[in-house]
Image (cartoon, rainbow, N blue to C red):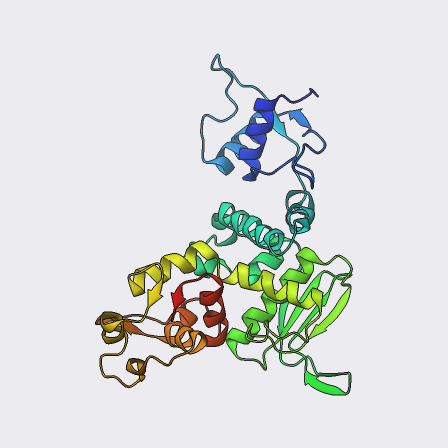
Length: 316
């Protein structure tokens, strides 16, 4: 066994399909990767994995004969890789944690969807896939029962059990609610080591502005928002359909959005939230028809409206 060089670390990262391998939670190097002398069969198998018939050749054309020791699932995708980013101030760290998880899904997309990667990148943002990636089981149950807290009884929509590394979601909820609740539980799994067993009421993202929610729940809502509706993707879709980086009401845009005048935009009295809801659920603009942004991202109209406002995509 030999001590790996920087070049070998780079090659090992390529083999593991993980550019962040061997970094600790602070962005420095963790334990250096171990390399072993490889057999011809091992080299052939790893070449197939890399899709590179020339992998592990040295500069002279001979075999380097060294490959990284196979890593366990947990070593490849430790929660700390994403939760470390969440230590940054405000919600910036939480957004970075969501982005790193999205990047990992993208890097592993061919393994995660062996029968064909979805054409729409939104479909890659599946909380169930992400949970499995960090070694949490995910299951849909017919019902999770009811739960009483502070004198209020509610239907349980989601449960996270960190001890068993399992997330359960109730089938009793609409699809958009199940998806946001699952992303909320994913957030607890990534961000909140202290959350061992936790039940959640139905969540679709529309209540994230409520001042009554605690810090941990607000953080989980924000992570779910960042994960399901990434800024770059939302901005790109908005620009594609509404032909602007920032929508403003004027004679031309009013006609393009509401040629029949049924929305009453001409009176100029719409609030920001009213306009954002209209845009979130709109299915046509300037004579072109499309699925609404809310439907495309599989979230409620209110949740998409809030996201459009957060990103400053409209003004009144």
